[in-house]
Image (cartoon, rainbow, N blue to C red; front, side, top):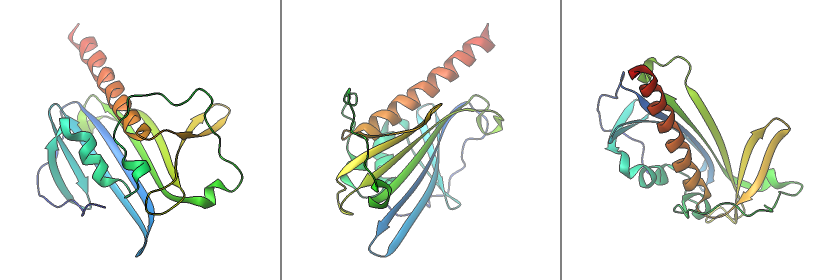
Length: 183
């Protein structure tokens, strides 16, 4: 996993932004690892905030940057595939939670007033890897529904595809809000 962020920069504070919080937890030889990183995307520039440090990066490099923040498991770091999950996804069996070697939760929010936004529109996704601690055997998503939590196996690249989809949706919310303010 990449080293903690440390380059001192000033994070954006008021322009409209897409805010992303990543919480990653995984088993490692040195014990359980937990990482919390906040990303702020403002136009073509972005900043990552972790443990009091900040690192700037190009928004166009969002996926490669996020990839380095995720647990070092192939099933979680797979590149976007641009394909949908199978029509009849595989559901986990009994005891699947005990087989998890990593968990990642990503919350994506549209923040029209930047950090001053008090009620952002947020979508939260949770991902789990089961199997070997080096590569993982399966990637699972957990999505809250009115009927409970829908847990299903996902294809390689689904975490990346969904992040791209969620960021696009948040950008659309910002555009709609800006159009509403302009008219």
